[in-house]
Image (cartoon, rainbow, N blue to C red; front, side, top):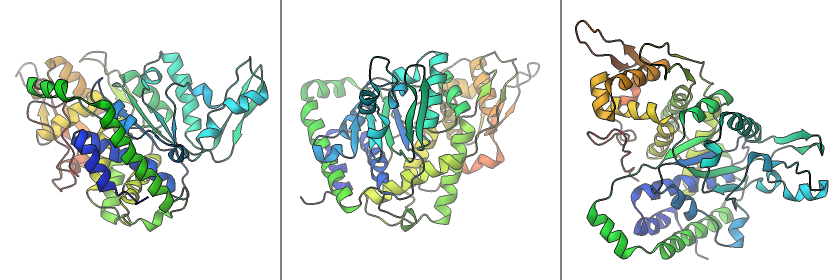
Length: 419
């Protein structure tokens, strides 16, 4: 088999799907390729988030295994609960449970789950229980639980795996739970775009999903076969893939953006006069390690020994995607406005009422990414936000950052990311 290059996979995917889907698939390939890195001590979890029909499920399907040789590295799990990592089913014997447990089956693999909405949209009690389990499991150090039926059972040692999933937009309450338990899950937004009537006509007349998915899956699986033949799991020293000081500083900044942007904020839904305050953000160290794994995976997938500025485009997209939706929409609109924005301007950009805009501005200000200045009723002066001094680097116009904009009048739309 002739090794297939990443660029060739891109050509095949772009033949059937748009650039946004290829960029999402490429990051998924990077997560897969990062299994080759030695010394991994965190599970890399990346969840594609977007409304129905935006392409998140297609992205997962394109990286699913289509042959036995790639099933060694890719494990498709369509439906699961966090309890299935270490099972305590009362109607099964201890021997049966050992064969059922999901955790040992995942070691050094990438789990692929095309629909995670039930996990992220459960009730408050179940959310806390599920994410408490995941918090421990995603540390990669095994997992042990106890029950009245089977006592204490589980696994101790290195049980590291990566995970690619897809979900519809995450509710704010889910982000609050995740903020309390730590930043172990990253997101990649796949935004929807309204199709013209001509686009819909072309879709209706020429849609051939089976052929398109099959061709792209084959290309990805050919690549996975060739990649792990060249770079077996746990075989590549991370330090052999150079990250320059300048790029490392930017990566650290994006990690800090995720940690600060996801901090739990209380009182944001209590109205414009309510008190809004944030908890203390988690240190960015864990997120730095996760982003390093992904960006090194990007380079490794492309057979490069150094990170380039273009790789930061994907990291920036992940950073913004990993912030709660309302905050990232406002932050993007603020950047388009040059770093300063009034509540009236925010309301127009986001298509919301001015009181709602005031409320969102207060919430974003609680993260310390922006500074909020209240309005004055007597002089009809609107409230205003401005990027805090420590965050003005977000306005830098270096090539690796120019893509994080939005079209005028549409602050919710993510632009196509270039190669």
